[in-house]
Length: 73
Image (cartoon, one colour):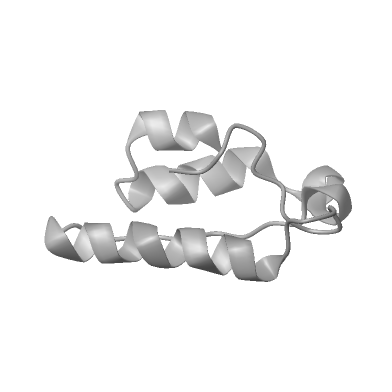
């Protein structure tokens, strides 16, 4: 769905409109397949050191987020 290098912020030729467009396509496809969509946007540069990864993964597991999706995160 997203290009291999999926960073949009502060890059020449890739702005927030591109990211919104990609999210919209993903959402529309999920509607066609009757699937739920969960979107999480994180500024890892600011938040990476502050994330309690164990707690985050426990919460996501409790929400029945697939292990492959948790691994991506």
